[in-house]
Structure formats: C-alpha cells, structure tokens
Image (cartoon, rainbow, N blue to C red):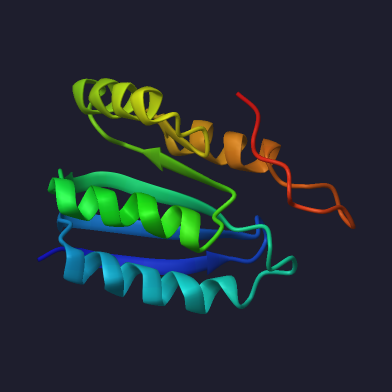
Length: 135
C-alpha cells in the first residue's frame, strides 16, 4: 500500500500527486478520486495537467499501469509529467510510451523540468484546451 498526497496548485492550475510505496489498483482509485476533487477547482475544467512526484514510488504492476492509461483517456487528461524516478526507470517508461504512442505523458529528472513542460502546455487564457501537447 502506498502513501499518497494529492493537492491542487492554484497558481499553476495543476494537480500535484505524490506517491510513496507500491501503487496498486486500490491506491490508483484513491489517487484518482482525490485528483477529481482537485480538477473541480480548475479555472478551465478541460485543462487537466498533472504533476507526479515518483521519488518514493515502487513500480506498479501491469494491471495498474493499464488501468492508469485507460483513466488518462477516460478523464481526458491533457498532459501528465512524472519526475524523480531513477534514470533506468525513466528509460524503461519512455520506451513503453514510445511503443504505445502516448504523447501526453513525459518523464523528467527534476520537478523544475516537469513543471516547465506542464506550463508550456497550458492553453492561453480564453482558448480551448482541445489541442494535445507538442512533442
């Protein structure tokens, strides 16, 4: 069971998740419930951008990863930035994202890099968030 924290960064208009331990299906559901509560506070409800601190996360199983990918599509998450995983783990995850063609998720070494990418993918005020993040 993982220790989770989820909060809304009002200034950046992003949902922040911190996961420590093993992420299983039950914990993923808890994270998503808390994230939905945060999404209700967004100025633009269609602009769901998520920052995930994975420094303390232990790799999840295949079923949890599949469910996470399905949720990403179901909830129309615009982009999701993961940071803090060791280099080898980031390499494996990048390979998986390339294989499945997922462009809305990116992995970063630092929180600063992850936040910069999320900020770059924030739509200008008054515009539609329908566009997907760039490569």
